[in-house]
Image 1 (cartoon, rainbow over the protein chains, first blue to last red):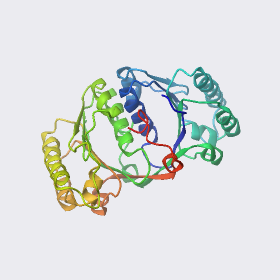
Image 2 (cartoon, chains in turn blue, brown):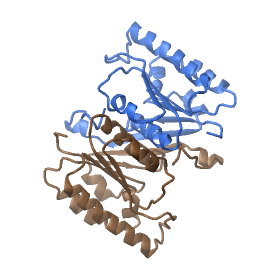
Image 3 (tube, rainbow over the protein chains, first blue to last red):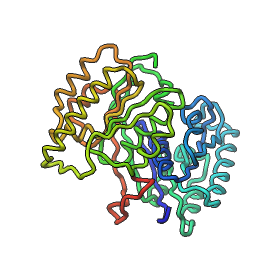
Image 4 (cartoon, chains in turn red, purple):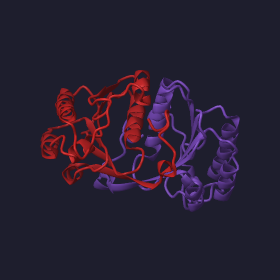
Length: 175
Length: 175
């Protein structure tokens, strides 16, 4: 990728934030670009993206959470620890310059509920010099600090959702 | 896919509608599901998704437009013809029941500017019996008729966009 990388944010209560970033990885792989997706607060080998990761050349998926529901109002110490070590890993991967696109999936939520310090993330991102990696931050509740420094911010709004009509999450569609 | 398919709409002026549907296809392929994406008003072999389509097992991409900008206020007869024959193809593919997911990319725009009759699409979709195929309709300006019959509607809103700050569309990221 020849140009400077931008910082993109996908936030909002609508469906498709992680999905859109997966689509970016898919599309980018067609042009020979490399993408690394780091999933915070997730660890599940039954996700479609975990299984499909092998198909895309240059796509790497890292899950840095655990396979348990994180109580956002009161995260367990283990969850905080995993989120923070995941953020350290993410910084190393960004600084390695090995990828054209790096997706920090659900990091907005991890910041919003205090598991990762939002100011620290903002300082790190602002401090990147001549960054050529496209950085994608997904998740609800993107902190204002992050929105302020991002170049592209898209909010996904739920207009109508079947889960509220009694339909459960479905394999192959929702995960 | 065991359950009945839902009708999903991705609309709004924000980035990520086509991308989110590509992500859906990617994720679904991990579970062994088959996806067909029909792109209206597009025909470009340099798109990332065109090049990456080969990587995903069970993913088929059809471009039913031409490689020219469609004047939405005054579509050329050839564009109207391509959109309408594309819609016929789409109906055949839906009725063939060969796919778990079918994405009608940009069909909302084709309906909104009168290239495809919105009432006809609504009637066709409402008339599907025991439909097990997930149907995804993308594009700005989703007509109200379509929103009314969809089960899941997500609006992507542009909060901040670099194109308005003088950044052009970039290969591997935006197409």
